[in-house]
Amino acid sequence: MTSEVVTFPTPEEEQARRLLALIKQRASQPEAERRLWLPGDTQKFGIEEARLWELYEAEVREREKHQREELAVQREAERKAERKAEQSQRKAERKQKQEEREQEREERREEQEERRERREKAAERREAAKRERALTTIMTMPTDGRDAALRSLAIQLGEDYAALHTEFETRVEEERERIRHGKVEPWPEPVETRALLDELVVQIERYLVLPHPEARAAMVLWICFAWVHDIATFSPILALTSADADAGKSTASQIIAKLTPRPHLLSEPSAASVYHIVDDEQPTLIVDDADRLLARSPNLAHIVNTAWQRGAKVSRYDSRARRNIYYDVFYPKVLNGIDLLLHLRPATRTRCITINLKPKLPTEKVTSFRFADNDEQFVTLQRKLRRWSKDNKVRSSRPTRPCPKATAQNSQTAWKRTLCCCLPSLIWLARSGGSRRGTQRSS
Image (cartoon, rainbow, N blue to C red):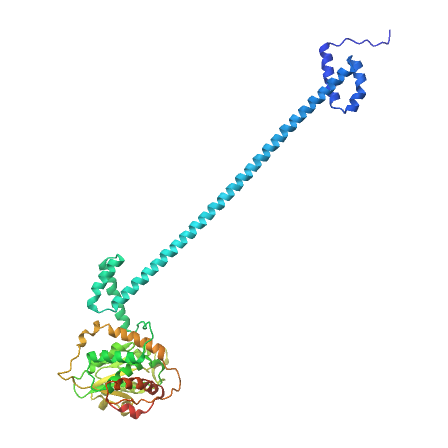
């Protein structure tokens, strides 16, 4: 037996497959290594070195080409991914910007809506204020001219006249109720004292005949005093008296009630009703037919007398509360009656400012007081008196007593100077008590 190895011939296809596998293997190796294997490979496959090297190089180029293509595909995929990411980012940014724009537009719409609502509300307020001013102006007009003014206002506002007229009548009734309780709005502008006194005298003499200029002065000064009564220390009584029954005492009382704050015109009050009303409302109390009433009601006469000075109290025992209750009876008061001073206590007479009224002569003409409820001048004067009192209240605890003498006598303007001179004097009397002897003089 021999030890030689016998090789079988390799088919051409297998040879080609092995050569292709070798070329791929060598193409993956470095060039130096390929050159080291080149001689052995040429001998194994029986191919020239140059030819085998070309195959190696061709495979290397093919491999490199394939790698470049894969790299290009990879880069293209990366670029596509980057572009897609950029597009997504841009899309997200556009969406965000769009949302921001939408939010800005929404905010602008809301702001515009708010501005529009504010403008509408402001316009409504202006229209309401204009309407309120128009209605207030019509309320100050004479009664016979209100209907035409209301019709014109209804056309101007585009409202139904019947509804506007109903609302206006309700306002008038409410205003009358407020006036009855002394609740009036102050006059919008400062009021000059001399002009106010002149208007008061004109209004009083429209319905009442006063016998002397001193009576005018006393009445208008006491009306002004009633508006500053809350700062007074003493409260003189205004006494309206006459020797006859038909001298205008009740008319004078009703005029004073229309020109003083919170008036209460009573004809038969009891002592209990007086101190309850005074303590609750601090009214201007006007007692009609006081000559007979005070004579038969000593308790009421005592309250009237003690109400001269601030701090006077009426004490009553409350059985439910089991304690004494003190009622404040310091208030402005008007008394009227026939020969009134004869029925008053001596101490009460010294605390009166007396106006002696006389019956109207046939030649003296006045307006009937039955139509006074429609006279808006009373409301105007109340508003002016309230503004005057607000601007001119004397708050000094020890006011200086002014000189009450008029500088002109028996002239047309003498009583006007008397008014302007005597008004501070009356306030001084109310603050300090003054001279009681001087308050007894009748005008």
